[in-house]
Image (cartoon, rainbow, N blue to C red; front, side, top):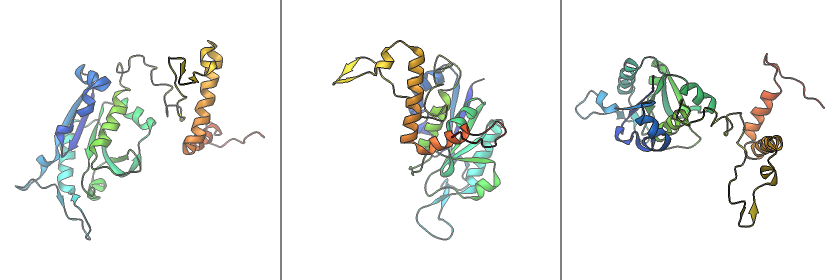
Length: 245
């Protein structure tokens, strides 16, 4: 069974977009996943196909209506009742590689793409929708976030990357950043590939990669390093272990 991606959007013509080329595009052509964009305006009830209105309490911009969005979500759930519904919004929980892996192992996902100033909060109170953010910044709409989420999932589907272990050592898979990569030429603009990577000693290479991964995570992403260190000093029961002096 292929991974079913349903996208609720005001711009269905955007899909599959960049997901129609490279690895994701080939996987789409091979039937490893499906892309079904749905026009939210089709669920509007007035002749103007309105999907938004002015914000309650005043303020700039427009807010997407809960009644229209709920009808679109309900239709998508009826089509694919077994998949989770996610909404791309800066108010959501940050997307992680662990969550991506969990989604990729399932039958698919329905993604709701917001626009304007956001979506009526009552939608999230009335429907089981997981709010997801791809970063601490604001985009014009949820479609770009949907591309990110889907690309992250699709590359993990069986057969998409080739070897099953292709992504095992990439950044975030172990909670750390990936080690630096090098390739030919050996000497470039006075800079050479680290000697250990040319040694042929697999044990030394593995140790160097682990050390660099930890060092780079500690300096570049102290937030990741803190979580990694916290996990290392916990016992299987969850109790923190005492560090040795």
